[in-house]
Image 1 (tube, rainbow, N blue to C red):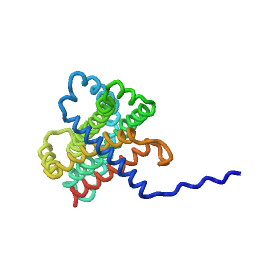
Image 2: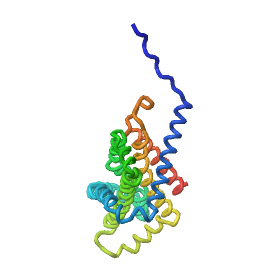
Image 3: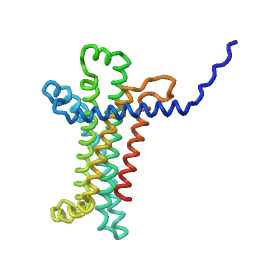
Image 4: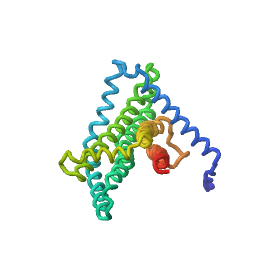
Length: 265
């Protein structure tokens, strides 16, 4: 009778090296993607159809669904905040609270999670399938570029979706907040813009912009980096898609904590 197989020993140094190596590969990939997005040759006529196909194919199906979800969420939260503030005699602070809760915090976070689940993770699974099937190696042998032809269009589509959904939903939330507070009248516009301007100070606006771009970069790069570099096997008990999601959620949490510290510390 064969002896039972020995259980694998936990090697913290090896796990730490593998963790650092994976994050270095993801950061390196993000730097390459960011440099290519800022390079004019990326938008050359020969590359525009592929890039446009990924952008439209990713953004168009999401815009309607996320618009409906964000509209319902904004209606519910704005109504609760306005009614609660009025019951305590704090109506003058209600709109500021609605803008802070919805536009500054919930909408960018919801957009990042929505794009991650619907765009980035499926794109990372496609990239991993192409890698495992040998299609990426065949592309290299033909003289093609995996980064330009496979990674960059998917990353650009995720980043574009993130920024588009966050901007669109923020405008919808502001419009709904105004309608709930003042109704269908233009006479409250001056007061509303003044209250929104008091929330969006230069520092808060900068933090909001950096937070949105940070969410977009994380959603665009981390799942794709995991799909491109991770290998299924005994080194990790998690599936490839779940490994990318865990890294993505950790990055989103870190960005959210840093933004909260910048806004309220």
